[in-house]
Length: 311
Ligand SMILES: Nc1ncnc2c1ncn2[C@@H]1O[C@H](COP(=O)(O)OP(=O)(O)OP(=O)(O)O)[C@@H](O)[C@H]1O
Image 1 (tube, rainbow, N blue to C red):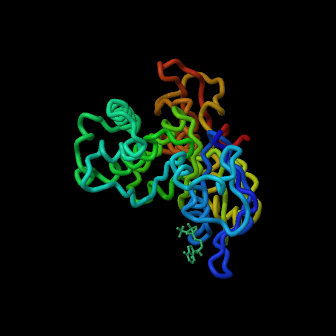
Image 2: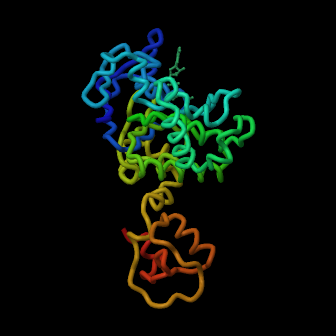
Image 3: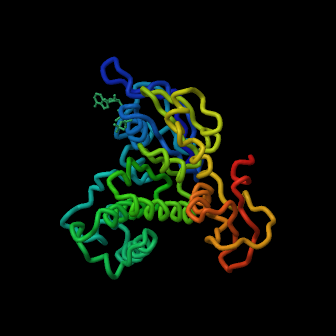
């Protein structure tokens, strides 16, 4: 059981609240994104979960256990933590870095070796090629992948990620987001991720929590947040002029397929494609409809410009 529940949690610095009266739930196996302006309390919220910060009031439970009743070290063994600055040990190989926690836990060598290979594969790095390198022999994106592999090494129930992809270029960021989605599908971890990037939150999260001045303003599924923002702040923050495109991002081509005949030219869309990309493809092809086919090339129908705005 790895559901996380915040119940009336506050943390003060002097008489200023870093977070105040936070109550929300991250269901087991879901990704929750914490977003909000700088200083709104996102990192504090995350670090309360692994007790790098202790609350002044309120309670956080993991599964059914009040985390205040656990030894911090025992708690952190159940939680992987990934931060932007990565924090790989520079003099250790990639394999040794990934093995950090299993070594601390005294796993047998064979089990550690097998686990390191499995994890490097999982994050898309060939163990034979990368296992023996040192961190400075990797690109930023590769280092970030090693950071994720290390956090997952002892199979923690929960993964906490603080701006993990903030320093990456858009292409690498896109790749590693795809990788994280794959890992989440494969492992079913409960993940809390802090991000400045609303598009990243919409792409990755089952639920987005919007923080402002240490308070939770709204928590909801991305599509619901865009369609029914609680107030003008949320409306501006998650959508603004991009709300329409971001709504399309939360839906896929599969949801808008219509029966249709032959389409002259243009790319063929895949049913898993987000609708904002489908719209982009239509604009680029100067077409008001494009064909949809599955991976084996079987025609499924069409998506039309009118169909995108219909519902
Ligand atoms: N050790 C500290 N002493 C005093 N104030 C602090 C301390 N740590 C955090 N704060 C304050 O608490 C508030 C929340 O900080 P936090 O780091 O959680 O925000 P954040 O949303 O993660 O910000 P950013 O996006 O800029 O990283 C801020 O106003 C910050 O200045």
